Image 1 (cartoon, rainbow, N blue to C red):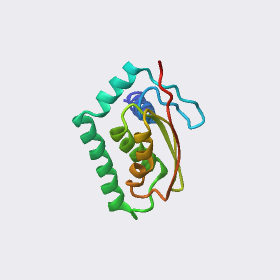
Image 2 (image 1 turned 60 degrees about the horizontal axis):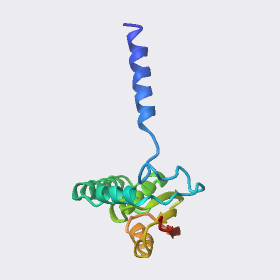
Image 3 (image 1 turned 45 degrees about the vertical axis):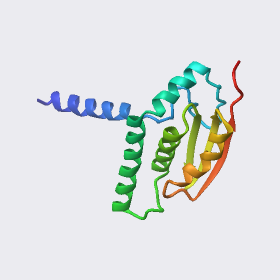
Length: 151
């Protein structure tokens, strides 16, 4: 029994450590705002768009955002959000509404910086308004660009 308890605790710690990884909008999204993004080819963009535009995925993302907002409302002021929650919620909102985009979201003290690329000018114009829909964002620094089309 003495050997079992440390094994159980170390297994629990290992599992929780592996579960806490950074989220991004898709597998090709850069890990940091400083990294450059690559424009996806047409097939990859089409697959990403199909996934992001599915009703099930949009419902899931919107549900996640509502859950976080309700949790925040129950615990503290609506305008005082943890930077990690703010990043995650804005990333989810952008993923659900801007298919085939490759965006990173960083927040510090409520100031949110969004970098990366979107496939069209129309999507570019939606980045900041979508991000501002999330409670707790004091300001949005939009550094996104329209990706050059691949031939």
